Amino acid sequence: MLVVLGLLLLLNSSVVDFTRTLTVGILVALGVAWIEITRAQALREYPDASAPELFADARERLSGWWESKQAAGGKAAPAPAAAAAAASTAGGSDIASQLTSLADLHARGALTDEEYASAKSRVLGAGS
Image (cartoon, rainbow, N blue to C red; front, top):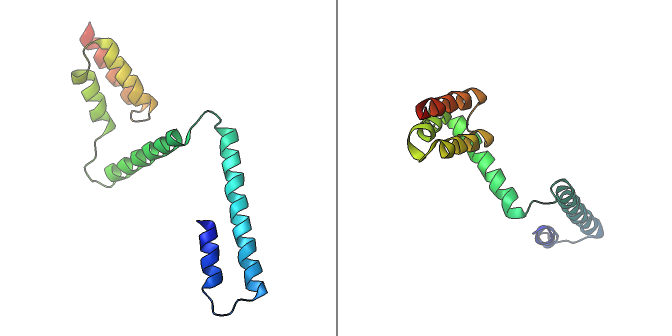
């Protein structure tokens, strides 16, 4: 993609001089170097992660951020408290599955510590 952009920059003008060719060549080389350095750094920081997992994580974080922005703006978005209530009252067949569901929501950041504690106490209170 970067090479195609460089070729388009070179072929776009009617006069091709050495300075322009050199400038575009340097910019393309710097772009390739930046991509490789960033890729190597990501591999060092996340050696066990595969690309699909990284994209899924980024997509999940972005959608969570977007939902929180919509909720803050007054638009209808599912609130984390509503998700906790649904997990604690309906969904699970037993207390263990309900607690697992709540723990998963808490680990993903969909529930705050207070919401998690409140929903957990409701599940434990309903079970006894």
